[in-house]
Image 1 (cartoon, rainbow over the protein chains, first blue to last red):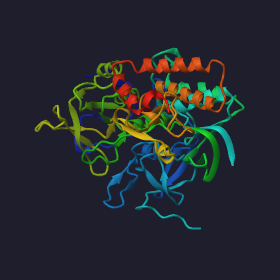
Image 2 (tube, chains in turn orange, cyan):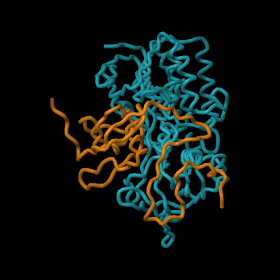
Image 3 (cartoon, rainbow over the protein chains, first blue to last red):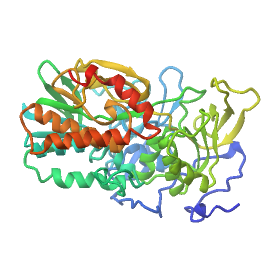
Image 4 (cartoon, rainbow over the protein chains, first blue to last red):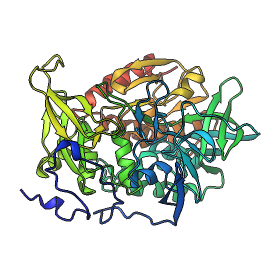
Length: 130
Length: 364
């Protein structure tokens, strides 16, 4: 049954009747929100494990990664369980990554800058020693 | 070392209101927040506030921070610091430490008002650490602040106001809310929010909980089941739901680290979300230099936060001899407003919680 609230859905949505195994995130940047206007900042390029990704200057690194379809931010040190974001306000330590060589950066609140080198952290990370 | 009369930690609704009250009193005031812009959780609130005009009824949460900042930025006795993480408060010397752009800064403050808010609780179920299991606030931040869709199909867990509101906000962002599950037998939040979801066709499954998240590296589904009156899963009632985000709206817990550090008397009050500082009617903690405001003192809502923030601001300033004319009348009005907000049917639990968190007799 057509729900009128879903009628102007953003482009690219797949049919919701697909079988469980083939679901994948179809994350896109939001457009046409009924109340909010999203500021458009300068588009910048950064790397995630060597791969170039575009993001918006100043948004949290995790938001830029999420928009690019990256949801696994690290693996837990002992059991290797995939971890992503959880609280988005810098309090839960689920999202720690190494940014520009500095480990344990809370990417959910850290603002993105042009040329940042973002890497999946291995274990507890290594502090750069000058 | 910098010196101020009053340092307000956190620029959400409570901190903004506290700083404005301190600023008006003439005290030198520092308002700090670790985010690059003020507002705390207000920056995500697209719904219109209700209640009295004093608490911005009819105004959307996202518009409120500017209303405060417009006044605060004009006050010469008020300093605003964004992107500065308060890392500790040392009660023996009255020093607040801040991390600002990689530099370590010390500020000597005669009074501190701790308005650090609260954080999402997690829920125990198999695979609850899978990427795609997000706090409701996180989903709200991703969507409303950064304009990024959290996923395509969301299972919402929890029917308190946050679960209901975020579900509606997901729909506004054109994300499908597959269902909302609530372990209790009835909806926890205001029915005005639940009604919007029902009109949008979202199933609200009371007496249901999530048993397991499905997926290897990210969420691809969930198993939900019915629960009985003792919260036990009814065998045979499990069913699979396809989703790529499991949103947990199961409550918040106050962020009180600095109050522990300051040696404040703390008490565990489940109705308020966890450990909270014991306080008097003017929001003063057991340490006379420390005041608490907003969700850090007990999880309520933004309107209550603005009121308790102003109460803490006026009181902290008064304790230093800074008082504007009519401060006492204003304090009475604020306390009456707070009692009114807490007097509804959902406020009973909060009232009992506040009583437990209050020092005997309401005064130290």
